[in-house]
Length: 287
Image 1 (cartoon, rainbow, N blue to C red):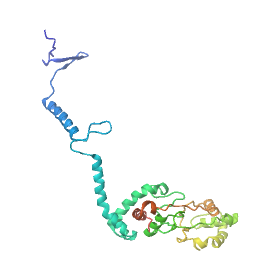
Image 2 (image 1 turned 180 degrees about the horizontal axis):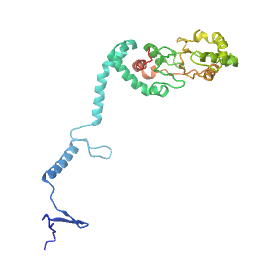
Image 3 (image 1 turned 120 degrees about the vertical axis):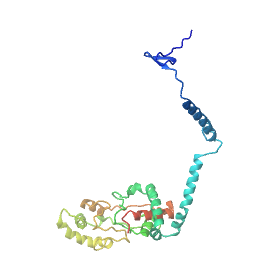
Image 4 (image 1 turned 180 degrees about the vertical axis):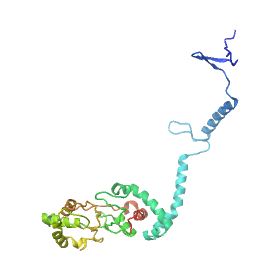
């Protein structure tokens, strides 16, 4: 006698599985679903034969078609290098001024220079080139050594006070703690601060102007507008590298910070330095 159970309502045999009085009907899968299922199995087998798939001890099966994603990436990178070769060659052959005057070259140089900046320069100048205390903001109009593209290129190539480069930009502010008396330092600090903002004691400004004329004007100029030949900053524009308070100015007068920038020419090469110069100039503060 058959033990097969037939559902009373549908008349379809059940599988024999039962949960809480609920029996599972033994309905066959739709034919289209079964065909599709077998097709996916066949496709998977064919795929693993045609392409790299099965892991081995030290590698994987190579596939009969010889496909390699690494080779694809290599070919794409080679194609990209070929495509940009004409721009790189043009940048190598032209000056930064000529590059800036060519729209297509300038656009390429800004993109390439931006990438180089993010790898080599953000550690000091910040991701937005905004700088920080002791590191210049490259977005503003204040340039110690000049903001034209060729001047920027010179600075990047040879650095600032970089001992191993004979052509590095060189200047050094005197430590006036050994030259001026404490009250003179207070006076000249008040005078310098007054050139761009209010001061605590206006009575110090007059004597400070004389101290400035006697000791500081030779580098910063009689009008305190600075001297780019010496890397002497403009003291009237309210842009400060080490702080604008009278205390910060006095500290700089007593024992000045003389910052150092590496010479990037030997590390990055002339082409990348040109691209960096054009990029920095494009930030908005370039002249």
